[in-house]
Length: 287
Image 1 (tube, rainbow, N blue to C red):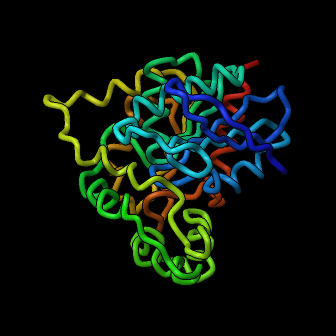
Image 2: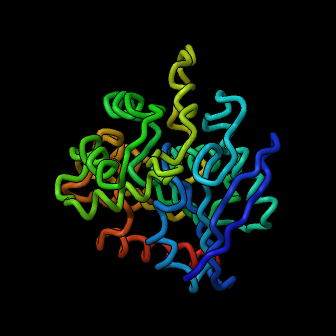
């Protein structure tokens, strides 16, 4: 299924990009938000499979892909992203959506649900919860924002393997090359990561003191159909945090994928079936 490239305007005036895959208005639309350093290409498989039967919108957060880079790097933070997504929902005239969020996208989903729960018909959180494992956060901070380039796609694929081999132990050369094409682009013959390196700047800001309790961010999801996908090798979402999330949200299904870390691609067979179950529940609740 083909898509249309569209833009919306952020509250501070940035032109932000999304892919709009057409589909039946009778089904709940899906809104996908990628992770920290990722872009709309991460959701190509999901969007192509689901579109037609329903509309699928895949956003690129500010500073990623075809979205404009922010002049102030301190706007690369979740509360600003939430404002951007709410602006999209308003400008595109979207009713309640099924929100699929990977990693940072899931954090945005949780914050949005707390601020405006009526905007969401249901949610898929991909390998993320209210509590982030410090080891995984440190690992991501270590490689995010390095303005590096590679001379060719094979070298870029090798770099992805070196960085993420722990999370995808069963990947081979074809999978690493596919990942390189998802996360990078060709800039005048140099292969570079497809995001503004300044997204790493907020990592250097001191954390709030005292730190807020993150668990109330789930309150907006109470009673909504939900799916939590976790990679069994994840260093971002611990098994303990996932279990506590299910305790707080009994209607949330937990799917743990073996031999995968952060973050699953959502095209795994078990995940495909779980997504279909989630969407069936969301559509049924809408009737």
